[in-house]
Image (cartoon, rainbow, N blue to C red):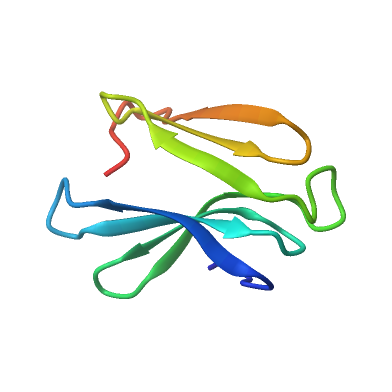
Length: 94
């Protein structure tokens, strides 16, 4: 679950299966990251900065998915870093 010291930023809705997910980045805060909420209201954290670590206080930006949905991309704005996340199980990000 996002810490929401700041606000949700970029929001992407996905309805590839009946659970329907909303992906969002967190704008600032002590542990910015990429988070997900499903139709039942459950929250998941896809990735987040370590509090007090290299990207703490930065802003996650640029959330995007590959066409086959097996990878997602995001960046840390102030650090100027773009990251690619791939599933090890071969499934897609819904």
